[in-house]
Image 1: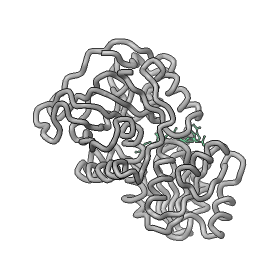
Image 2: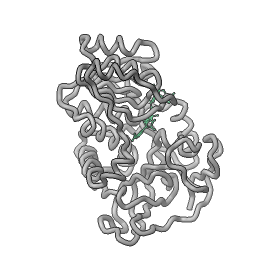
Image 3: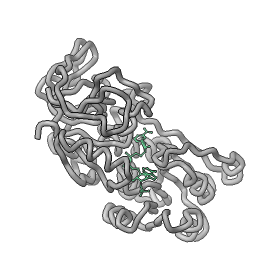
Image 4: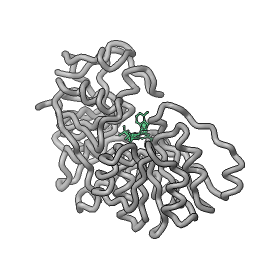
Length: 326
Ligand SMILES: NC(=O)c1ccc[n+]([C@@H]2O[C@H](COP(=O)([O-])OP(=O)(O)OC[C@H]3O[C@@H](n4cnc5c(N)ncnc54)[C@H](OP(=O)(O)O)[C@@H]3O)[C@@H](O)[C@H]2O)c1
């Protein structure tokens, strides 16, 4: 089968399209004819050996897929060959067929397109887990989203807005912020040109944000913490800026606020039933149109490296998807 292949941990340009043997499902696994696969920040990391998961070579990146079940391994009963599904495959998705754990494969409602599922499963799954579960978001709260024009960021903007929150989007350019506005952000902060803490304080009448969605890390985390309200919650989701922040713990004490880790992979591994419940809730919102994954561009396998490069270079607003059979 055709696949984007990684033969060694190396920069993105070392990836190439070639042939890999089609995977077969072991017990507890499913193989999926991939009709769409999402491009996420971690796909750019896994091929460079910079992610927690380090697959054996050769492998194909691509952790988020939607398609039709080809075959199921022993013990798999909740999906069957031919059925529409979406899955967190971890890797292997930029290929005509990929393998996923059955516990991370879910039936896809007829009303949700393969493209939408591939563009939204991971980002909305993560943002949903953070906002509804870890932060217990309530209507009327103010939610500050850092990296708001990216995949998880735009998902958080939409989910918070749909739940009745007041949403402040922070991103690195006017163009990226305009996209956040289109997706429901109430207030916009260009953190490339404005002091983040001062801008959040000004936007909240000095009170600060109730919830911070942090996918960026670096120096932004402390600035956001300093602009957090009493009893606020800071969701630590990712470090797209490349630097893991160190936080003065006295700020947590002074603000009576919580920092909560949000690791969606671990939710699936440790609490599969709860993860399935949250995924079903997200897919139901895709089906009724209350959440709409923002697909910026779809490309074939041959253009996948360029798409990964664009994401790593901070040039993508919204979400890119790969269509391996196009
Ligand atoms: N914990 C979990 O379960 C989980 C799940 C999914 C993703 N993540 C992590 O969350 C982070 C965001 O993922 P994503 O898919 O939303 O990525 P993305 O679409 O690339 O968005 C990341 C955003 O971060 C901002 N950013 C600031 N400094 C950056 C830099 N030096 N390089 C790249 N981006 C930078 C960019 O916006 P501006 O240019 O506007 O600043 C960009 O839009 C990643 O670290 C990812 O690994 C974690």
